[in-house]
Image (cartoon, rainbow, N blue to C red; front, top):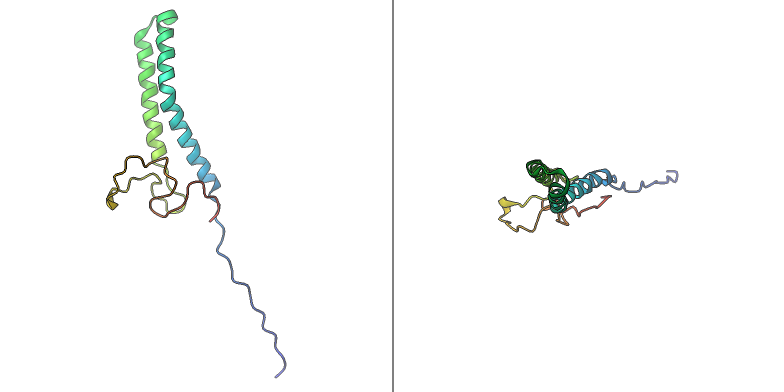
Length: 124
């Protein structure tokens, strides 16, 4: 038999998945929710002073404050509904089925409670 050379193919690495776009969407949702929440109090004070000094319409100011607070709650809900890029379950889910009732979890989690994807991990 003639000498045959065996060519070994290198093992194929798993494909790289880039989660950069999904994490940008998460950061935008989280930042909007935090801006709306932390911006509510300064907006209230500013509207109070504008109402007393210039506008003289306290009911309009109260309506704007209520609308801002409703928008803040909507933004917080929207940020909490973010789906993990890997497992597509809610990233900040509290995991009541697992018996986890820690109230400090949510959009500040560093790891997905379902698939253990680290926050802002770009390539896996």
